Length: 189
Length: 109
Image (cartoon, rainbow over all chains, first blue to last red):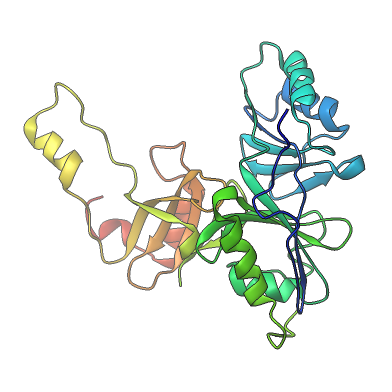
C-alpha cells in the first residue's frame, strides 16, 4: 500500500506563534439528519462521543474529534490515519438511514497554531471575533483565511487547529507564517 | 460593513463570508404561465429605498441559504430567518414595524 502523504510534510514556523503542519489523519464526512439516532450512533461508534451543537467541536480520546460543519454535516477526525475500518463500522450502524458517508482524509490539510500570539495571528487573517469569551475552548468556526476557505477551532490543549483544502495548503501555511512573523505582535487578545 | 447572523450557525458573519442571492420571496412562473408573468419572474425586481427582503448564502461557513430583512438606505438589519419560508415570519415583520412605522404603506411588495 502507498503511504499517505501530507501536502507539506513536517513544516514548522516559529514566530509570535508556532505554526505546525500536522501529520496525516483519517477524516470522515457524515451528512444527513443529525437529529436521527442512527447518525448519532454511528459517530458514537467511531469515536465514543456524540456530535455537539452548532459551532462546536467535541474531542474524543486519542486525538479524535467530531466537528459541526453545517446543520446536516459533521466531520470526524480519527485518532489514527486509517479511515477504512471505521468507515465500515459506521456503515453497519447507519444501515438504511438516509445519509452520505465519505472518506475525505486526503481532501484537507491540517495545521496547529499555538503560543500566546495565536489569537492575534488568526484574527489578522479571518473575519472572526477571537476574544476568549466569544471563542472559548471547543469552538469551531468555518470561515475564510485571507482568500481561501478554512475552518478554525480551539482544542482542549489551548492550541488552535486550522484546516483548509489540500490544494491551498502552501498558501495557508505561508500566510500563517507571515502573520506570525517576529515583530508582528498586536497584543489585542 | 454589512454583517448578518446566520440563522443556522448562529454566528455573526460579515459581508466577505456571504454570497448575495438577490430579492427574496419571488414566486416562480413555470411552464404554462403567461409571457408577462414569466418576464416579471425572470427579470423584474423591486429596487426599494428602504425595507428589502433578500436571500443570502453563508458561503464561507455552513453553506446554507437564508433570508435577511434590511434597509437599503441605512444598511440596518432587521433580522435574518430560515430559507424554508415563502413569506417573512411575523417576528421579523414586527421588528420592522417597530423600527419603520408605516413601511407597509410605502409601496407594493
